[in-house]
Image (cartoon, rainbow, N blue to C red; front, side, top):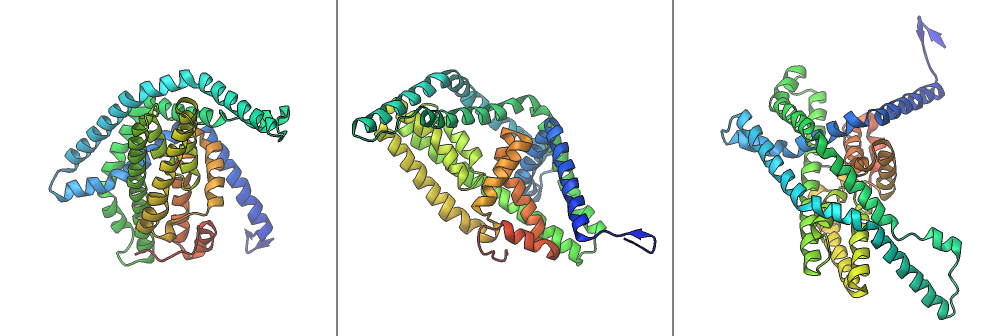
Length: 349
């Protein structure tokens, strides 16, 4: 249809064009993984440390000195993680085949026990379907994917530095670009504040969850407690599903090495921590308006994991939450944000 020299499209054509553009963008993201993943990690690190940068500047510290202090702190934390967890990851990867075999043997023994009691459940197809070592392999894949990023440490830190330098003057540029009382300025400020608030709260609650889990596993003498604490910290960015994924490997490891009662104690500890922080503390800090439905969390996990690999699984919910906050900042797209919500949204302060 052509009117006044312009080509118009009906809704079906617009939908098809949108879907075609979406496919092209996703294909481009998959092809650009090597560049996109370090950039996204740099972006999220910059968002998390921006409040610290602003606080140091408010105390009179020059911008360059504040950024230098933050980068040194990131390097120290990264070095400690590499030293404390790197050897554990190597040992776990080397021992993974024996753990898988032990789990398979215990599964066979359990099914044999049920058969002896009159419940015939052993079947070759059933045995192939049940693979208790799959969680171990997935864990190793995720941690190895994160470890592979160590080669990009310099690039990531360099991008973080430039992002923090830009953040120091970003508000002034926005004020020059938009009138102070304009709707565009209000929407942008709301979007940036909500993104920053979500990432900071999620990071602190994830850090608390990982620390408590590490202490709990150390009490029960579960091997690689620091490794499982780091995994819990990373996967805690994925609500509901992430806590289950993080709990399965140490529970299975405790079952193989320490027995069923210790495995039960480990599982109960994970349950208590996630109920206390994930179901009680975190929703009260964030508000229900910054939640996602369980279905959306699961689909985003599959989608971003497919697009960006193991690292994409960890970044899946922050990326989807960024989209949700962006959609909720505009009247025209608030209905899309409501579809992603995990419950009745509440107005954010």
